[in-house]
Length: 360
Image (cartoon, rainbow, N blue to C red; front, side, top):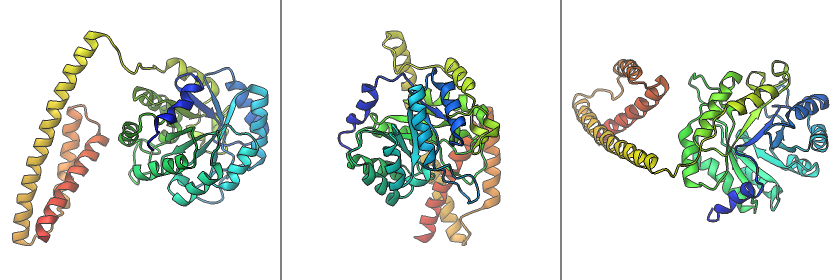
């Protein structure tokens, strides 16, 4: 995407408040519900009113959306409140119906982003549109797949593009519904700093009492906006009840959230920042040096195992190390999640070294 700077222009030209806020129910359930929530949000920081019309569900038999009738309800939202509207599309038919009903913002969901065929079908249907199109990350942590979807839309001459970070599925049990994998969103941001980046704390957390903290983290990381599921009666919602907040809660959140400056020109701040970054650079170099030495020891272990015809993986030893490092990490202010991820990566690299030696 050579002209990626053009991608930010639509966001700047619209002169929307920062952060951009997309809010509304997970699913459009009834006309009354859609309009009630919209009227409660019309005098807030919300720029786009979202509602799921078609709901992709993991298993059949659950509520899968009201279908096209819900688009008429979104038209009424715009007429009565002035809010712009947003919904998810997953095929050409969805796109055609959404455009016919003048939906302002369309997003491609995580289950659709995983399929280049689906993304291409949507891109072809949207070619040349002036609507805002956002692409959620795929369910699996694959940055190339995410960027590939963006490139397909960009190639279709869609100028108002952005991405939504909604977290990634994992078989591990964590406090999140979908683990954030912040580093992937940060890497995408570093590659394409002009691509608007929206955070979806509702799907990352799966729990309404965690939405504020994840929203603040996203703002601390300079995200451009938030998509937050909002319902007047969250516990009675027909889908994703646990992660939706009330309109009043949303309004209070935006009073409490701290908006960060991108930088500060004050000399003392910059001098202190440069000094701290220099310390980080030294420590990072030491980390690489230490890891290199650790792999040299792993190589020696690999040679010994090769001589004695011993298996590379020693599960009991690995579990002992992991338990010990989690306790050590806690004493140094490191979360269990971080220690697990770090040592699993180190362990895998050690195994790779030893396997290479044994196979040689």
